[in-house]
Length: 257
Image 1 (tube, rainbow, N blue to C red):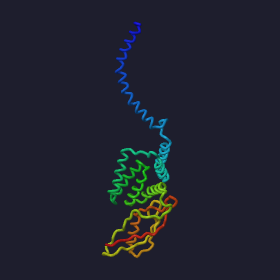
Image 2 (spheres, rainbow, N blue to C red):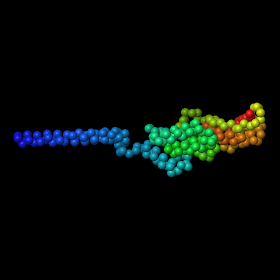
Image 3 (cartoon, one colour):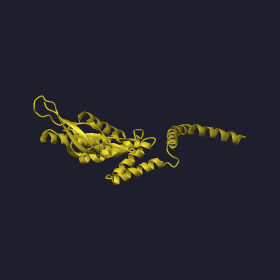
Image 4 (cartoon, helix red, strand yellow):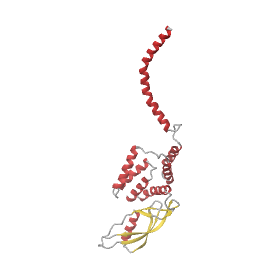
């Protein structure tokens, strides 16, 4: 009995000495354990990206390897649209996108569109799955006169737009969403001269193969009307939820002042 009482007394002293150490270790370990439990509840059991994330990363790497192929852009955007949750954009990327869109909306005149287009191109490289950036970049390049650079990006936008909005009518004709009037001529205060132009509206929403269908204007006015039509933006014709080319006749008025 005496030995047992001595052992209990020494054990109590040991516990008293070890108590501060145990409390300190508990305060240090518990937060880390709690955060680990929270992360484990969010991540898959294996700790690796799920099937959606792996497929998205595969499409993104395919786009980086071959950015000239339009179908790679379209597949990435369509797949990102179906993902839940949507792919995240870093805070710096969000700021760059907001700055580029502000530049496009408020400062995109002909002399400033090149700067806006450069900012939008960087935004597309940051988040290539955001479809509206393609239209804004294409519109900025059209206003800057760079039609070849605008064409593939507008094509990507319209292919994705028609694929993701099947509720629209199955088929409809093209219609203009941005009109640029030709410069006015000094001929007194007379009514404008109408030029009827035949053109093919491509899947990129731009006017191609412009020719004169009917006109009573001067040759200079006809040329200015054709140049102005190059800067128009259209929503292309659609058939079976896909953009298609269509030849139309458009009236452009050359104004006098």
